[in-house]
Length: 589
Image (tube, rainbow, N blue to C red; front, side, top):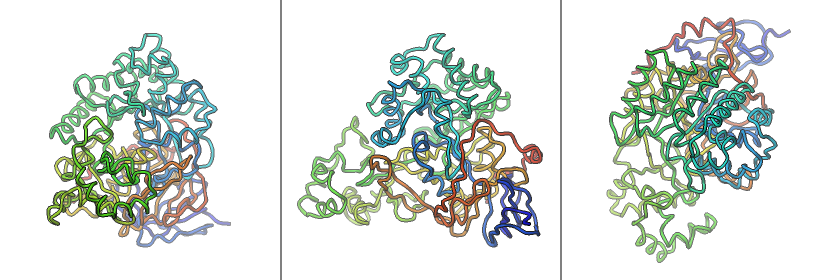
């Protein structure tokens, strides 16, 4: 009789604690890791990992699969990038709690904030729920990874306050008490926490600001106090920090009244060299005061993709573009090859109005790069569209047009918006290696026509752990951050470490050949909706709960993933790992 369900033999184990890599075998039984070491004995299945990296499955705590998870078994593109647990309901947007008459409003909010086609949401969402607990019930069922959800403030505010909430009116004491009660009920039913948005970048598809933008401090603190009485649950926020003192004080107050952890979006601002340093200092002060506040940081620039099939392209407001906009890709390429139309298009470029979709950023050729088949996310300044156009002796618009016409008109350009104001990732490195930050903000499932950052985990290992010419970051630290530390941040202490008793969620990776592929468009959402997808090479085996879900990037058909309800404690036999940590400082080399 076999002693083990699975043994992964002879791999280079990076176990997620920050400990030095070592050659070892990993045994799995009943969906959990049973032994790590030099193992003998029989097994039902064996994977030869000689020469490969063996790491915990990645835990992505900032995604937006709120709709997709109700109609799709596969959380792609995240599942192509070693992610074995994903958390959505971030930024205060989601689909519960909800009154039946408010379905359209929540679709408009998600469509506007997260750039998910409304037609896809209208066709894909079957609803059938009102409370957050009923929404969780609708998420049950086989998946290619484990999923978890959070209670979104936008839906909660609309549910309790109706039009007053949508119009950002101040909540009454009764409103706050009701929102607090329902948030707590949602977390008690299995939600991981409560989320909100305080950024003017978040608008509905009709152009209105998110309902939570100007929610008063007493509203957030009142909800936090109600959640705190559960002694479980976390908070996630995004803010413009137009008044850093006031905003961070709200964060502190929410933590103080609840005793619960809080994380927030933390990026490098191109307009202020000291912005992220100031927020890091505030986090350190809060931690010293016993408040568990963490920064969620990107692993590369956050930017937008521009292409003829994307939401945005540099010519979309050009009057000549209207002649070809609705053509099929092949027809459009042929039409743009007509010398007369090409000349008229280029002559009409420029002068984009700021108040239109995309504003002037869609023609910011000085900061725009070609994406290409194998993206490099720290390109030098001489690779901008403008600099390359100058070297070629043509205008930036003409050079951009020719780039977009490549590959049958499917090529894309990339415009970094944050974390690349100084044309390098030195500031991002500071964020990633800080003691109280984690890699996040991949937004898997969202921004499907402009962004594809669900590939963040692959970039984290590829760029920072291997390819960056200097100031790399230790691989052990990167795996620790993307597995154990992200899991801990949302209360999932049963995963992210390769040690006995932990969940058998793991990756076997050909690290030397790990790389992110270029983004591509697919029309596979409900109602034929479009989305940008991005694959990766190098993931030999991805395993969820002891079952292989992907082999060499292809789905095996196994769907062992399930909804995770609420905080998960560390296994009793593994609590020493949680206590000692074994973390490295990530300073790298």
